[in-house]
Length: 331
Image (tube, rainbow, N blue to C red; front, side, top):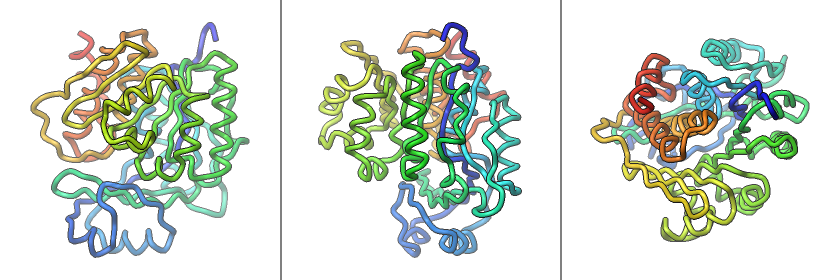
């Protein structure tokens, strides 16, 4: 598209996060796999919520966090995701629009409530997510605004959403439409457990439809079923144009064909909460990419965004903080 309306359009699970501090004993009591995202039903969500400590509500969802970060950096962004017409749905909608994101997916009236993720943050800053998907399960092809898809530079898809058959269909349709329109398609693997559930489908998706892949070290090792990061690099190199791979305290590696950029982690960061770190990295990277910056700079901006998020409580940084770090990284 010669004059795209948006830098990035994202499709994801529209979720309100409830964050609370926890400990390993609580995780053991409820048999929760530490550091993973598990899907739960309404009854389990109510039981855990009643037993967890005081929580902080914040609009979240992986792709929602990324698209909010892009908008905070000054990018033009759009989002597609399903909430219910209820209080949490209104909160989610307000929060996205307040940072300048175009969002007009029709809310679900009646039936399931807006999704929520109960995020338990342990003293080592690991986050364990128990997610009730609620209204997000009703996202289907009819909810996709194709003008948002064909009218952007990059389409961003969230692996978590693959759990829902109709949402999967919506994302496949969007990816195909984007490719036909000359739009780059990006995808985040989201979680190693998610990769394990859909490895064959993800491999096919990456090979046929994805231009830019985001993954952390555990996810990329799981995708290709290899033991070493170097082996994973060699595998992914031939299956998508660009791979941006995060490695926690080791920083990140960005590859494009024979081009390899090793990005150091931001030094001296006190880790408070890792919730949203990968989402923030993708936000910084995609903002830089859509502004025409080189891949190394995109990786540095992604790393700076992630560092900002993990040094605070919650998945989204304040706009003023984002603006300040962008000015520091970009000069």
